[in-house]
Amino acid sequence: MSPDSDKAQLIHQLRIDRSEREQTGAGVRKWWLPVSIAAVVIAAAVVLLLTRNSAIQVSEATAVAASAAARPAAILQATGYVTAEREATVSSQIAGQLSHVYFEEGEHVHRGQLLARLDDSAQQAALEQANAQLAAARAQLRQYQVQLEQARRDFARDQALIGQHLVSEQDFETARTQAATLAAQVVTQGRTVAVARAGVQAAQVQVNYTIVAAPFTGVVIDKAAQVGEMISPIFGGGSFEAAGIATVVDMSSLEVDVDVNEAYIHRVEPRQAAVAVLDAYPDWNIPAHVIAIVPTADKSKATVKVRVAFEKLDPRILPDMGVRVSFLQAASAEPGGAAAALPAGTVWVPASAVVKRGGRPVVFVVQGDKAHEASVTPGESAGDLRAIQGIASGAAVVQSPPARLNDGSRVTVKSDNG
Image: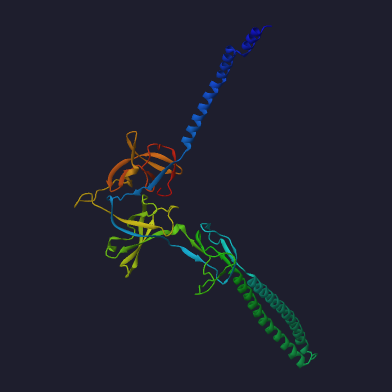
């Protein structure tokens, strides 16, 4: 074979078969196109599902019942703090060393729940001693009772024989004296048993004093002692003993204490409507009312303390939070005119809560983790409030609903101002 023919054969072997490549490409395209379409459909479904299930973060406010006479007007403002009507520093009733602690700060506790124990070895020893003394006293009493029964039988027998002159007068008198003496000893020993029983009860009380329990249902807001510390019910200056173990607050008794300038105290009266705004949540208007005006003044500040109750408690309200209270009064609709009557069922909400959907005014009411659209009839405005009809007083409404918020959308309520 010539060199030229060999070269031509090699070139032929290196030539690419275009028909085979086209067939392979066609095969790949046959399975790649359905797979691509399926991937796009699945991705779209996942995005739709995530979008549907994602919660929208919103701020809420509470609808306040409007006065049947007129729109509310703030006639006075005062500042104060959230306080608890029931708050207790829990301590033991005796001094001792903590051996067990069963709670942590922030924990909810129930009335009578065990919080801590003191070392009770001395009290248990005293209780065992008291029980032993009681057992000994009872045994001695039983002995005297048996001797008394025998003495009474001897006396009865001598009494039957004395008439027959079968026993002497001296033996008869001895038997009677013996019975009387043992009867007195039984009475005395019975009182000794009573004293020993009281000693057992006293020792048991001391053992019970080593147990520290919650005085009422509430939340532990402060843990003041640890295992191994010495505690005492009375705090002494320079002492190394803690005066308390924990501070428990009844969260259902939260209220507001505000200081009102004594020059304006005449504007406040019991059961007067008010609106409280926490410093931590400046956009949250909380319906409230006056509980009482404390009948004394602080001469150093020229103020009078006023107790204000929340209409509805909320977990976001915490003790010692700063709060501003606006005391409300029905105002006239027109100067010098009669009060403008508002229809029954009217509530006040932030004006930003009322939006339009489909050309009609609505608000979004938060129920659980969803917002439900509610058609309303708007009324007059008072500052940043708007009178509406269509929802109940106390309902939680969304402030400034975003455009993507729809009926049934999942929401989460903002826990802070951010």
